[in-house]
Length: 184
Ligand SMILES: [Mg+2]
Ligand SMILES: [Zn+2]
Image 1 (tube, rainbow, N blue to C red):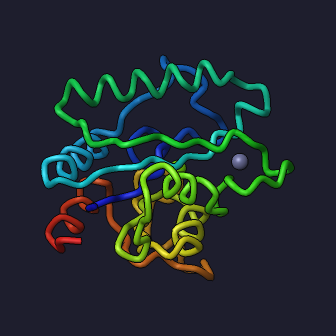
Image 2: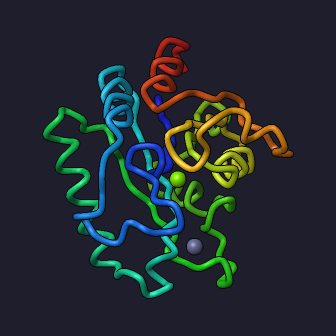
Image 3: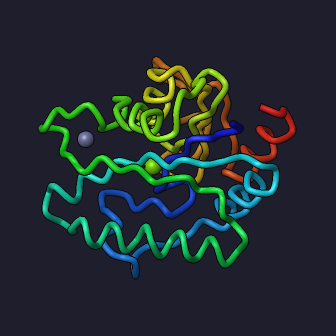
């Protein structure tokens, strides 16, 4: 299966510094995020979204709010001909809860494997916008891509990172073009 793992905020939807997307009205797609999803869709790649949403257990929004965001997001993407999202996984725990699913932990990747069968992670990519995403991708053995549409805006900002992404692209569109041309 041609499969790509994606983070949500800062990759396909706007990243809000020091805040959470608490309801659908606050959710906003990144245009290049949609373009990237469409490219992956049209080239036969499936997508799984892995996202930390600790705002739920912090009491800032409810699981219902989160599900409403997800359902609306999927509906909007379907209208644009994007039907390749297999599933959206969230960790709703706070850091203090020490769960095994909050990125950079890999619990949600393992959950995907339980749901969809054996995944050759080394042949997949994890695309995110933060150091946590890069570390999570490395932890699960995927190829890692950092996009500059979220928390990190330039290559200079990651100079001091101990763990660096395998690739850096401007946005999901460029990342998707790279992946689909490479064929893996
Ligand atoms: Mg993000
Ligand atoms: Zn968790």
